[in-house]
Length: 327
Image (cartoon, rainbow, N blue to C red):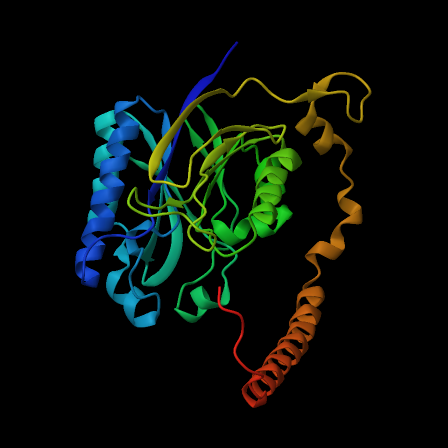
């Protein structure tokens, strides 16, 4: 029997208007509300938007985040819950917040009645976030909504296949992936993003940011392309480079079926779970591998920085060889 779910992924503006941090902060909330309203008017069952949307364009350091992160619970959460109730819409709401006195990169999971079902704290932090005082999460939870079970990965979490696999093993049927993406190669990003859906046999919903209509998109800007990936890794729907709300209906009971492992037709993610050999994977949980990598990374960083310094010196000492061609 079909289990239809209407999903909206919101591609918010990458650059909030406003001259002061306070004005940008207010514009961020207005944008979140404005585009959630669009998703609600489309009768979406669930909506998601991009990572850390409440502090976009604001100083991202200890002082700035201490000042502009939203308290949870607090007015920001109340406004998101109001919209959820108004439109009877589940919402995955990412933000930078203060929870129990700690800075967190998090996502609130809000149900149709405007109640918080749970909170996901980003588990893998890049160094700038940790340096800014954000505390990493310690759990990969799955949350029950009225249409099924969902998990969340925030930005850097997708780098680690184990995250998506743990969410699969805990029963997630959709994985939401709010993120910011700009400087990395697009092929690298797309392969990783689609692979997580293939690895797990789940739907994967990404939410990034878009450029304004008055801008020309160029490499290095926010990548856009928020989208919905099917359990077989196919792109079911994808946004452009620009600000928009992408809405698509899926059927959660339409699983990926194959003859993998059993030699007979079966839901593929079940076949993967049934054929796994956890007894072989203990090395993935060995903390010594991380410590060794940290040592090797330190040496590599020093070598690369030394090489960069040499190239700068060589460049500054090079004598001009005359004017180049006029183009």
